Length: 178
Image 1 (cartoon, one colour):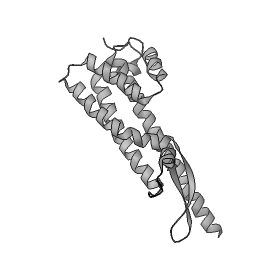
Image 2: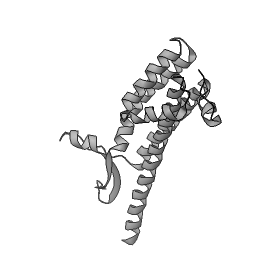
Image 3: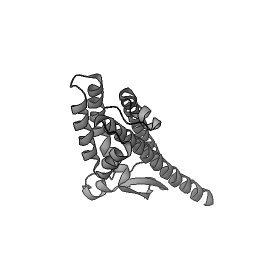
Image 4: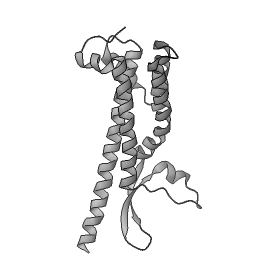
């Protein structure tokens, strides 16, 4: 019985760690978007641009700000703007996954055939649950798959930031390019 308790605690811990890593990856995406925004608006003071970007609480509004600034800064058929449009489409698809992870609760679930396991129950699904549907319970493996998608997006936003010089200027402390 004590072994079962340890195994149950291990699944709970694995789920919490998976959630933390996935949300941490999303935070990196947001940080890269902030630097892309700063370059796109030709900010001479990164900290002021970052403060303005961070003051917007809605991720959708942040994306709209980056989109508007990229559209003004780069030609519609430029590689930078084309890259941004591709990234935006992917972000629009990933955003619901981020929301599922940010708004939910780790809960014990009785498994078919007996036993118990911890799963993550997104609150948005809980409140819109229809009796005919199964509840959405995410396993640590499910969360790790979402994290992997987020990490792929980190590569894309980092590459865009590098291509427009964002990270280089932020690290140097010099004014961003005009």
